[in-house]
Length: 59
Image (cartoon, rainbow, N blue to C red; front, side, top):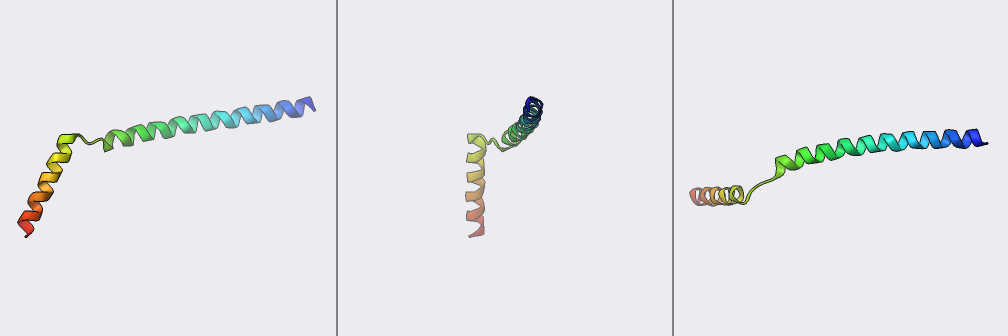
């Protein structure tokens, strides 16, 4: 019985390790995507101005 419980604990620890590794991978991907998505205020202002100019030129 003790051997069975020991084996179950080892399997659970292995699964927890796999989950930890996967979480680290996902956090790395999130940080990479977040770095691409950051937009500064000046970029937003420039985009707004270009959209307004495009609307004026279309009318």
